[in-house]
Length: 68
Image 1: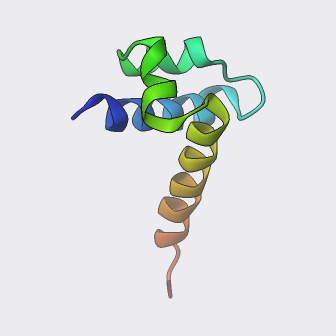
Image 2: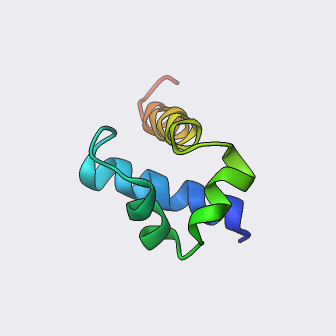
């Protein structure tokens, strides 16, 4: 995976472990193995990255329900 995917994966893990409001950019970097500047480079901001992580996590959860 590239840094973009690593950051998204790390953000999803942080979202599940710490929640949206308590996750910091440094938490995401630690979980992803990417560097802090990669967030701005690939997503523009931590908030954009976290929103994307939330959307994808909810979609993955929804796909697990019968009839969807």
